[in-house]
Length: 436
Image 1: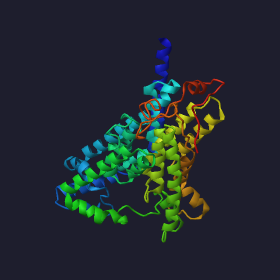
Image 2: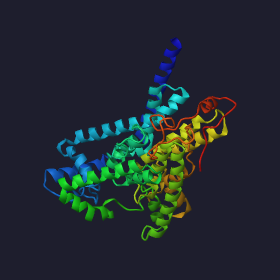
Image 3: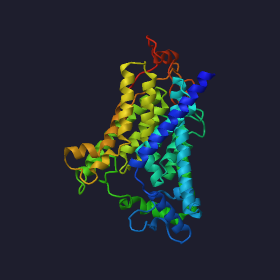
């Protein structure tokens, strides 16, 4: 008992020390945005509700920024129009923290269980490290909705629902109705043969959109005919924060960015993503399928601001997961953990902003697109873990891995022999391999 008490005391001290380090880092490195995006939402909703204006006609004073989400998102956010400003900030931060906590635990929990780490300690460390992660801190400081969308997608893909459930796809559908970019996860369901979940997602997104059309027809007409196509509302493509393939191409020639070059890169990215996603689902590794799709969405979207890169968080955690699952002191473990560390280090560093004013030349091309390179590496090398499912397993309609293949939480598990190997045994048997 004394040993257990000492261990708990040591963990508490470690968490407090890490919290102090992260707080000091944020005090120096974090940029305060004054909840800029939340101010846009808040102003647009109050203009719509209290001033009788059209929500898509609102622009934040002194800027070209207005409400850019579909009308269903406006309905979801509608209660904000009746809150004081400080209450709106509080709700935004609380929702982001809660969604982040749940998603991170779904991903970190399997690592903690396999490594024998204390659950609360693992979660506390992961949350503190996430707080320093630039996309996460930007999401909080801007008042963005990224983690809520990731949570909705994770509800479906991290298998909180039984395989083949009639509700599988609802989370993805709602996320798509709130913001169009998660629609790539519907394509993911189609590409990997989960027809029922895909059509449920399509039906959910369509129903939410039609509901918004019935309740706010003028706003819906304005969005789908005008606001959606007005790219000036989202900012300059070449702006350094746009860490997508489109942003990379635009920084090569900001005046006349090549659409053809961008489309070629998008098609090549989608081809790699489709191949690797199918391999992940065939192996029973739904978490990696989610991570690959999140990374791909960031790459192919015309605009991927730095705060959108929270979609890279699952991939970084899974690098750690695969590293810890590899044999102790082995080369594979060192490589995977080093890759996770380097990716994380760059993504807390704000390194791309060093080229904010001048991204010309070779150093500008390489440095200003650092987060694009990280996304591409994750898409290409993120390991796919083969589950211990028996041959021929799977549901009849291909609607997800069988329960024997994936535990609740969606992360494919190692066979018992591999768990022993990861603890340092000399002889390693099958159950873990990288695909692609």
